[in-house]
Image (cartoon, rainbow, N blue to C red; front, side):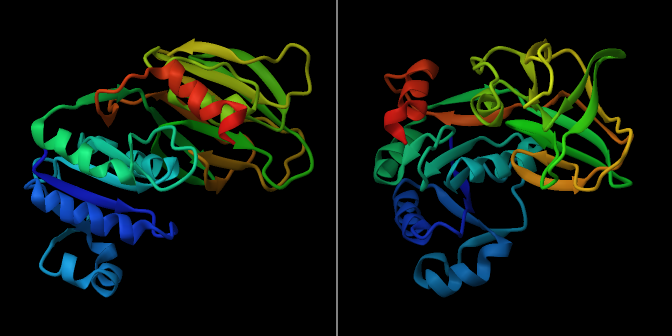
Length: 294
């Protein structure tokens, strides 16, 4: 049962405060206590003083105290919440304020129905595999989670880069390309799809290893078991600046020659709140990725 929900806001969305105001009122009618991030306190008190005055604020979601995260925004808002808080084991409800909304479960005008279903316990928790990333990047150690993908790319450079890809200790390929993306099943419909990779059903436990614009006839996307550990290592004859590590579309750092990332299946799954609907993954693909949805 959902008793306390923490609100995660994309403050760049113009309608976010209107949506929050409506959701807070609905939550209180359904005996769901709204909780807010401490970093949002000042702006919320300025914009919605009557609704949030006296409300609870926390620096981060706390397992056992928070039952759900309500993410107001687009897919990127859900991705950032998952990447930051997946280890808390708190399910996320995505509330769409954007356009595509592939990971999002409800629209703002459906909130009354959604909260009624939450109140009655008529929902499911969908588990999605995530990636765990360990990297040496710019001389610093990086450890992070990814919902969609991890990529190494030439970024703003005009020249291709060289990378070695290992599965376990075995060299799979030496890529001369714009980069390489390693995607989860969820991420197979994101950057990897744009780079020519296959669409993978979200319940298939695998990775997609996909070169970006490779300068080779034999370098093609490879689907790997999620039990494998994948290493991508920069291997340049003449090093150039600007090689970029990105996680779920967010630039993390600039990589140096011979630095590497290691990616494995995360011990924590993404937890997404889902309501009973007459749809499945393939109908969602048609709705979200057809030419008529653009």
